[in-house]
Length: 366
Image (cartoon, rainbow, N blue to C red; front, side):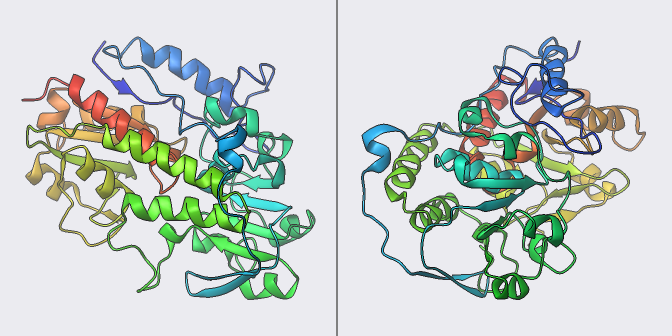
């Protein structure tokens, strides 16, 4: 079989409520993503060239180191994506939306605070499973939950991965939720308004969210330990020096949705020494026509594996389409796969960077 470097298992998103705890913890999950992911690992392992899939972001800080550091003085007042929020105490009942926010909570040892989660993008990484409670194991919804479902859980905080998660069409408008006594916090890296959107996103922005969440929840010591560990891991990554170009294909077929010049894809590609063929597009992610991709003829393709648009589906398209099958990366099978959940700004970005760098080194590129 051709060499397909895989950083994580493929995922399937079934309808209804899902189990997203790793199968080693919940071996009897019915039709769950975790079971599908485990089977996908076995299938893809036969196509790899020896790459070992990492287990996920740095494990939660524990013990004395976790509790060291300054204690939070309340209230904590923040300007979050242009919305003023104030925390009078550490939240105790949290609804998380998106994998990035759920995994942030778990990485900081705050899993017990989660009363509901939704819109997860894949299985919880192995090393965070011990922090996941039943609310994480059985999400409210595969998509953004309705405000009624959120309010039924009586949360004091909705922690959202995207601004669109906390609108009237989603879990509830931020102002309306505030009037009901529910605070909201959006990952700062996902802010869209000028002056709030990271331009470009940096690892320091990601680390800043870890520290800010640590302050809100009065676990600043844990946050500091996690940031220190991730900085150490990042510094150890050796960038590729071959001057290779790359396309970061996130989703889409007729018109692919790719990593632009200012988001997490650009940050990760730059860190590993790859030149983004979409670097001229000032956006986090952007549609890019196949004509432009064919003209750029990237040396490597980073394929994001999502249940709604798997890496294998992308490969099948590339190899069968007359316009793409003769691209250098396609002919040479220079594909590197990353799980969707690791490609949005969050605690798995350093792990995704390390994986991409290691797998890139194993590709037979010039």
